[in-house]
Image 1 (cartoon, rainbow, N blue to C red):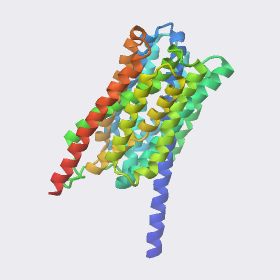
Image 2 (image 1 turned 30 degrees about the vertical axis):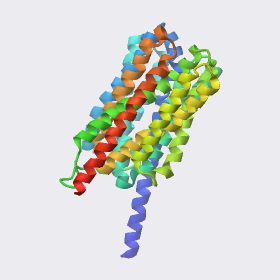
Image 3 (image 1 turned 180 degrees about the horizontal axis):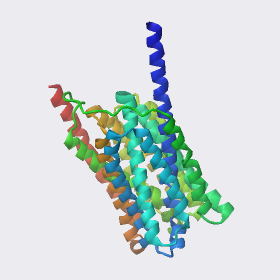
Image 4 (image 1 turned 180 degrees about the vertical axis):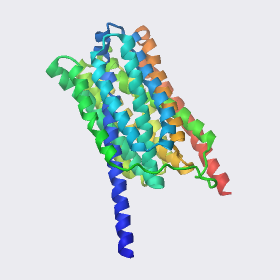
Length: 399
């Protein structure tokens, strides 16, 4: 009987690790896709014969799609087997990558980016939700690992784009190469059984949904993800237009941001097992504010831009997964709850990059760092309220 129990436990652990590995690969694919727009934005503007003010609407369209995918995707994972849903989203991403560089009409490109955002949002919600269902209260280090692999994909994309453009002369083969990397992940997911959906319990502090806490996290994600998407999407154009770097160096600068994000998430895996989420989040936000502030003070220095970019990447690294871990400690994280988190994240990713685009040509490249600093300072304020509320809620329940 003891041997049977041991074998069942081993099989269970193996199953968990297989699913975790599949989610990690899916997030490499998501990172590859998510980081395409920034380094290829000038080329897409040339393809569609538009100005940056006009084509910056692509950020809005994609994030609107992300919002839609997040909202409906969360409910989908609560009612359907998760792995087939994620596989369909991955195939949709590959198809969009094939189409994007071939389009010369802005409205058609916008429509494809909108649909790409839908499948990205649904995949993002699925990976985060299913990982929580697999590991439950032990999810902290695994969640940082998940977003570490997203960072790997995002780090590789500008390098793939830069090298492919050097070889072929345009961005078409860069997008097609990324599509070839994304599609096979869907096949692995289809081979694995989906985890059972997590239900909201009737009692207990972690068995209920704290709606005020959900609302605060939604606002926090709006501000934070807006900053991450805006920085990753605009740092290339910022550096080039400010004459701080050539296009090749700016591409490596973009990779530096995603690379620092990736390294930070790797470092956060052991830290998350030892440090409380609220302390990690405070340190992260302060690091973001200081790093962007440095670039604001010395915008013409390539060394400072590199320092600030790497600092922002490292500081942002664990914010998203750590916030999810904080939520898991305070309440049941269903697909619908995760969906609401991603609605806030998608809205932020939609508004902030678009806002920067509206002022970029009129005010100048400096507007990128100005908007980012204000946004991150606001995020720090919301985090303080969030920590205070979640702590009071736990104390009240314990009393």
